[in-house]
Length: 447
Image (cartoon, rainbow, N blue to C red; front, top):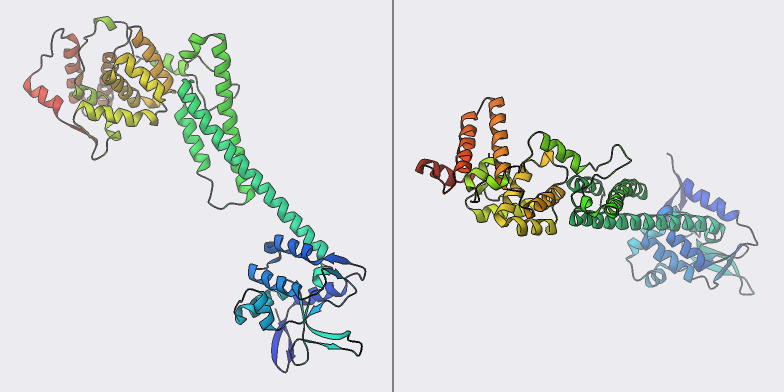
């Protein structure tokens, strides 16, 4: 775009269309207009970004307004101030002359002031015989009067946007806090729901929040969070209602009726029934006939190899202490609350509870609510109707079936199953060969 140049003997300054527009606006100011210059200046500060002004430029505008003696500015009065650069620098907190000139240009470009240059480029005022100013050259601040309503509207829009942004941030914070608290409560109270998936859904939503985001982006994220909030709230409220009807059934994980067909929550009992129909991990019809001795660590690791994923430093479990440590790591990842874990250890014993955790972790893709399932097994253990032996046997049998279907490792899986069967059939002590004992004691490594 071609730029017109206003030339003086002492220099050249570009004349842009924006400057011309400001001059036209200043000339159109009503003669009876009156504004409070510091009120208008506050509106300009609030609308600074919308106007394109900088902080340093507004510091200079503040100084320029201070050179006008009156607080009230009138449309029919002379609104030109003519401070020298040295005076402006002192009132603008001592900025360098080059910075001063640059930000004066910004004020002109934004249409906040107008240059009124003298023939020689100097700033001064010519007075008449009565001491009244006849002609002044410097900076015209009449746009402060002419555009006062515009500045007020811009400032109001900016304030409204800031308020809306603050409110959406508050909604986001409250929603995140409530969801985390409700998830913790659901896990702690054993509410039958897939809390692991709920936590994943929550993390997926909050992971979209950028460090700096416009209000519209945050509002979209809040809407997603509020939808998840409603799902979690509905699950908890349904559980409370069923608990009032039958406290015993609710403790065992009574089915939560959810009116939403695509709900994130599924019936724990429904899944458990399917597991039992196909050979549940906790088949305890003959619990009393099972041996009371401990399972060998090697057999447990053969049945539950996924536990090696939870071990740092190469995926090796050498003893029961390391096995218990792996169970402690796996428990929270499955959404099992500390109270459910403590109750299981009290009812089953620490080692048996850890084996139960390992078996659930091995089949977690088939279990909706690991916490609710563990509580159910704990109740059965309290009644003397639970043993870890059928769980391990079922996992070894599944491993054998999978190996046969894949066509590899079938012999090793069959050997593991046969070994475990021998242990079950032995009524006194474990009768195994030295070679087999070495096989059991050898550390299992993850693939």
